[in-house]
Length: 64
Image (cartoon, one colour):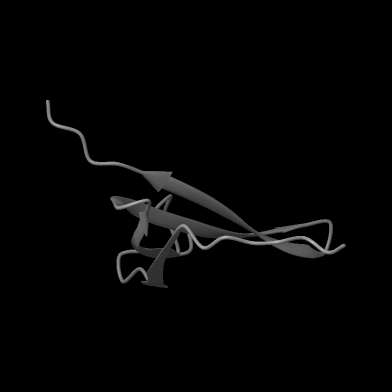
């Protein structure tokens, strides 16, 4: 039997206009909704030992 998948959310991610090669700003930013909770999404491109990968971070906005 194969794996079954259940969709729990969706969103989008776009190039971050504030990103520069020497900044720590994420290369891509966007929003995702998971189980009716909206989260901010950030992604960075990494190249290590000649292999490309992406780091992803999801955060929620909290009140102070």
